[in-house]
Amino acid sequence: MEELVAKLAEILEVESLDVKSKFADYEAWDSLAILYIISMLDSDYHKSMKADEIKQFENIESFCNAVLK
Image (cartoon, rainbow, N blue to C red):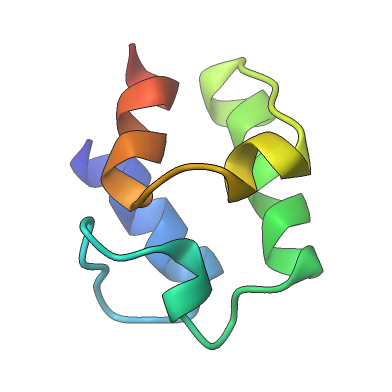
């Protein structure tokens, strides 16, 4: 999970993420960040998610758990 969290932190332009927080808690969370996440999921994890799916996760930890399962 650490690698995925590090990639998300880079996308959200922060040093570190609190996995209990929501994506919307970060200033850089916008449509471009969502596109970067979708692209990263496809290229690095061979998973696909739609923007609406990503937005519905309770927190970053639940997103990571879904990606890594």
